[in-house]
Image 1 (cartoon, rainbow, N blue to C red):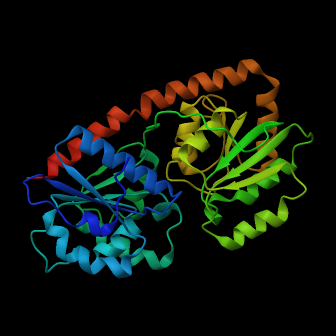
Image 2 (tube, rainbow, N blue to C red):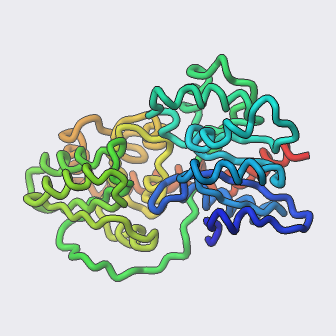
Image 3 (tube, rainbow, N blue to C red):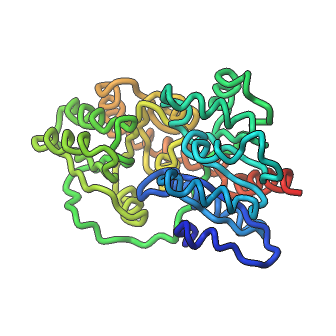
Length: 353
C-alpha cells in the first residue's frame, strides 16, 4: 500500500495544515504487526483527511532522539505493541513534557501473552499516560483490566482485527502440489511453535498430506532445528513469501493450521477463513476468540488431537463445507473492515481537538 516508508522521509512533514497521525509499529518483513499497521494506516487515510506516517520501532536506539524532536507535529500517536512502541515513548511521555499529542496504545499480542519480566516496568509506566487503549478481543480486554487494574486511567476499546485482501493475482507456485496441502504461516520463532506442526504431521498414519511451512526466520537456531528435523517427513519449508504467494497457496490448500503457543489475534487465520480454507487452531486465548470448535474450525491441544481433527475434516465433505461457510459468515460479520475503519476513525476524532 506504499505506507511503510523510511523514517527519514516520514519525519519531513509538509508545511500545510493537514493533520498527521504517527503510527509506531514493528515493520520488519513478514511481521504480523507490519501487516496490521499497513491496514490501519490505509483505513485512516481513506476515511479521514489525516495523513498517516508509519514509523518502525525496530531500531529504537537510533530513532528515539529524532522522534522526540518531531512528535509535536502530530495530532495523535498510535502505538502498536505496548512494549515495543512504549519503550521508545517512555523518554518522551514524561511528567515534564506538555502539549504532547494524545497517545493510543494498541495491545498487539506478545505484549500480553508473552510479556517478559523486563518489559513490565515499561508497560506500567506508559499505560497511565495513554489517552486510550485498544485490544483486539473482549478476552484480552478482560486480561488487561485484571493485570493492569492499578495503572488504567483511560478507556479500553475493543477493535477486532479485520481482513483486507489485496487484489488477487494468481502466482505460479514453484512447488509440486502432489498431496493434500496443509499450510502453516508465521515468523519462525518460539511463540509460533513450528515444531508442534512437525509433530502433528508425524501423528498422521498415511502419506496423503504435505505440510508447507511459510515464514521468515526470526530465530535462526529454530530454523536450523526445523531443517534438520523434517528431511524424512512430507514437509516443505519455503521461507518468507509475498502476500500474493501465500494467498495463492492458501487457495490451493486443503487446510490451514495454527500451532502458536498463544496469539493476540492471528491475521493469517482470518485470511484463510476469508479465502474458504478450513482452519485447525491450537487452543489459546487469541485462537478461541475466533474459532468455535466444529463450527468455524477445529480447536486442539495436542499434535495427536490436531491429526484427529484433520482426519475428521477429510472424512466428511458435508462437515468441511459447513465449517467453510460458517467461518466466512463469522469473519464477514465480526471482522468487517468497515467496522474497524469506523472504530479507529471515531477514536481519533474523539481525541483530536
